[in-house]
Image (cartoon, rainbow, N blue to C red; front, side, top):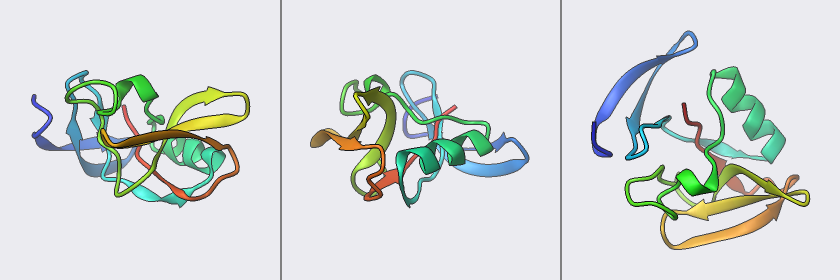
Amino acid sequence: MTTDNLLWATVGSLAVAGKTTANNLYYDGGNSRRSWSSANSLCQSKGMRLPYFNETNNQISGGVSSYLDGTITGTLSGGNYKNWFNTNYSDWQPLTFTGDYVRCVK
């Protein structure tokens, strides 16, 4: 599949639309702004996880795209998480920051 393939997948008991990436990750349609722990819990409840920064389209062609704006990753360092917005932006935010969106992968 290419990064442009929209597909339906069953994740846990939910059927959700999403896309696949060049690194063969399925990602969901995106979710509201949350703290890192809330985002992590949300993804786990779907049988998914947060993408690592090196899996994003900021780092590799055809990687997971961000959702709307700054998006949370599972990449952590010193009480902060890495966020990204497509190929344009990345930064570190404190785990308690609630201004970034959530995208889950599997």
